[in-house]
Structures are given as C-alpha cells and as structure tokens.
Amino acid sequence: MSSTAIALDRPALPRGGAQAAAAADGGIRLDVAGLAMRYANGHVALHDVDLQVRAGEMVVVLGSNGSGKSTMLKCVVGLNRPTGGAIRVAGRDLARLSGEELRRARLPLALISQHANLVRRRSVLANVCSGTLGRRRRLATSLGFLPHEEIGTAFACLEEVGLPHLAQQRAGTLSGGQAQRVAVARALAQRPQVLLADEPIASLDPEAADDVMRLLRRLASDDGLAVVCVLHQTDLAARYADRLVGLRAGRLEFDQPASQVAPERIAGLYATALQ
Image (tube, rainbow, N blue to C red; front, side, top):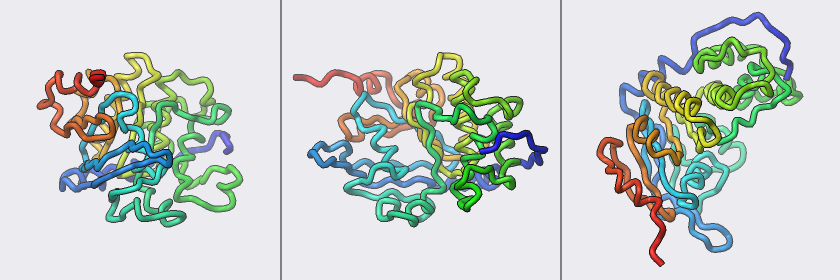
C-alpha cells in the first residue's frame, strides 16, 4: 500500500451513533450456543459452551493454557470449524456457512491477536486502512493500493485510539503498546459490531497493558461494541470486565458479573488437576 502523505477528510467514525444506539437497546451481538470442538486426533477442546454478549458489554474469558479460550475465539471468527453448536452474529449462524458466504457473514467481527502483526515497512495509516479491505475488494486493492475513500475513516480510527500524530510513521518504529493500539484501530476500521481480543496484552508492559484495557473498556461503554477479551491477567479482568467467563478443560465453569466472582473461584481455574 502506498504510504504517501494525503490530505485527509476526517469524518467521525461511522460506527459511533449506531453502535451506541444498539447498546441502549441491549441487543445481543454474539450468541454462541452448545459450541463443541473435537479435533481429528480425538481431543475435545470445547464441550457444549454457551456465551451471549450484548452491545456495550465487555466480557473477559479466563482459564489456564489449554482450557479452550483461544479455540473458542477461533471458532467464532471462523479460523476453526466447530464440530457442534451455533455461532450467531447479525442473525446468521456462522457455523453453518463456508466460502464467500462465511466471509461476508463474519464482516461484523474483528479480531485482535497477541501480536499486532503490522506490516512494518508501511505507514501506520496504511496498516489501519487495510482493515477496510473486507468491504473494498477490487483489483486496485488486491494489488496493494489504499482505498482512498476509506483514508478518512482510517484516520478517524487512529484518533479513536489516540495516535493520529503517528499516521505517517513507519509501523516498524512503534513501541509494543503503540503497535497494539494501531492493531485496535485497524480492527475498528472494519466497522465491527463484535470485537474479539485474544490475549491482546500478553506481550506488553504493565502500563501499556492498562492503556489497552482502558481503550477496550471505552470502546464497549462509549461506542457500543460487544467486546470479548481472552486474558490471563486476572486483576485486570476483574477491574475492566462487566462479566467474567471461566473455562476449564473446555467446559464452562462460570459466567457471572465480575463483581460477583470470588477470587477463589478464579484461582480454581488455574489449580492443578488432582492426579
């Protein structure tokens, strides 16, 4: 993508008003029912997991390594094909779809990973603008050109995460915290209804991790996104989440308001199984 400086029209993010209204009506944005995942080797990673997330709600999923947290997110976003259950987004069951139909149906979903996965040699703005390519599929974009009509949206997303001053900077020069916030901006450029974050602060220092968690909290509260975040940092989970979901060995242990989950119950997710 070209990283040439361009005069920018800076519209407000098109998400905001509609998403905030959606939050007000409390609409369910992600509805997972009876989700199961059995791999070809016979290992069962998920057993009959249910999860509903509403607009404006931030849900944090906790559990030890191998508990099924990341597998659940990968099933939701379509990276893994579940062996049972339903995943409903905007009225469509993603578990029943494939190919181009699945690609279109999952446009309301955006995924942030542990690593920002930015194109280091390109500008921050170009990286954010790549988030719009799902709805701008044409020859020019397939050859690496920016969709010029989306540059204003990309800049607005950078403003949303507090980094508009870095728009023309090469992504390879960013700190870890800055890079992850650019990854959030890229996800916002997709105009999602549901934002999935798979251990987004695992590689960040405490201050940067807190910045990213505050940002995700604000995107739920102020912009009406349904946010699902997988974490190991139980203190941050309790501080920022509306609800805590606990997984152990692929099974749902609890799904409760964060204020009602006792520390002992969280600790139990990480306890070594009795031999």
